[in-house]
Length: 308
Image (cartoon, rainbow, N blue to C red; front, side, top):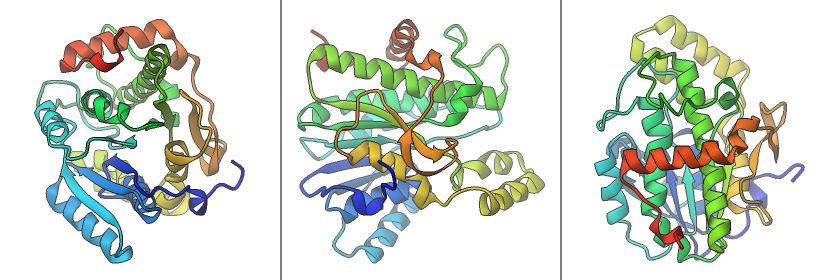
């Protein structure tokens, strides 16, 4: 793992991948590098216009790339179901649950969930469950859930998953990222119990310069805060190309362990991939099972293929 970089991504010829939020940032880099190594990649994007721009940009850089757009709005369960129902391949080798929002003003998804919890966790929970048959049809398939070191700010509140009692944007974000890790933990446990070779792992990019940081200030009309974030992205953050490395490692490297958490090796902030610290509450079986049950109830998606 030391010094692992994009040239170390194994050959992906014959494999099919889906990357959510692939129109920019680490999602775009992840999709590009998988395509560079021969994978057929579906860029799952909310905006059709931005998604098409990303596809064209990728094809201009890699003329032989096999890439296509799939419209997916993780804040709308009907869109998630439509994407999964229209998925054109019988097998799916790599699913990267990457798209997300961060520190937004309070809002709700189309289905009435707090936006960060609804998009970052519930949308991906539903998507993964609906694509599970295709994942199980691919030997050694990977599900990579993109969390954040910011998960350490807060555990989930199982009695207030939608932050209806009190909303604090950074705590809500941290809870959604804790939910990502608990989802990975419980998915890995269920896969092991079922005896399949699907690998569910988590990763995070450290502090990578992407559009994610500016979404909140833009939504609130705070130009000064937006400018400060852009300056920090230029001065402190690592580029998206580096931020994508832990995700690419979890998605492709040999020997990735189920329920592992990969991030940058320098203080979880920047650098090449390495095992990352995670809060102990993200390894709690009871919490994982309770979140799973609540997620099934809220989304209506059940992982029947993993049931005995």
